[in-house]
Length: 305
Picture 1 (tube, rainbow, N blue to C red):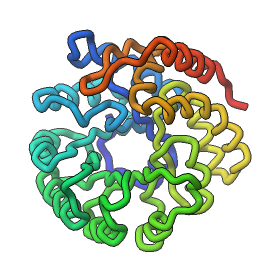
Picture 2 (picture 1 turned 120 degrees about the vertical axis):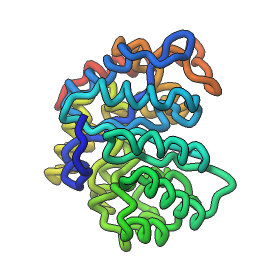
Picture 3 (picture 1 turned 180 degrees about the vertical axis):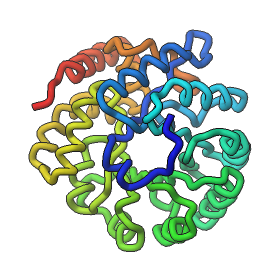
């Protein structure tokens, strides 16, 4: 596992894969199946892994956290950057900060809490976490009202932020007043698009964001990595051709459930046995699984155009 600092160059060099977390039938973490997922992603040239929402860390049992850190750190290649998440509640994130402080992870992402928060309160909580962790964190902006751009800028200026994952969904990603303001006061070289391949080109072209996170990259990592290369080369047209290849599976994720669909897609495509969903989620029905299997297998077979 890579332990050096996170730089804009790293964010540009690799798609940030956001994989699911494989479990056995008794809900315990599966070491071999999680290793299979990581190895598949790495074989496609991906060198950054982020464990967060797709891994359903929102519902992780407290006593599992140490095992999670050990599994994901120990399964990754030496040059792979691995980023765990913490939170989303204040008590949980501060407990996890003490475990992370004893680890070699160069950064961790704070899962966004919904409800019973204020922007200033979230910023203060992040400062407490960083003080305990001893390293800067990934700020995950998923909903309006969670963190004002000015609070994000102050956290960045004070050295609390390694990078920012921006994931507020817009009907038109090019029309985004929040993101307009954010890139005015925060260097866009430390901001990544956080909603997969679909808005990544627009976020690069209109807002100069550096890289992007993806769940579907876990199915065809080489194809997604080629899309990032096209964006880095300024070839927006080529990037858009590749983007469209991910659209069928992304449409299913958006219409059913991003987390549940991706979790089962990796199993249905034969990448790894991801096992059951951790409650409070549930398995998909047969018709949903059939559509996901078709889309996942088709995506696996796509080659770089």
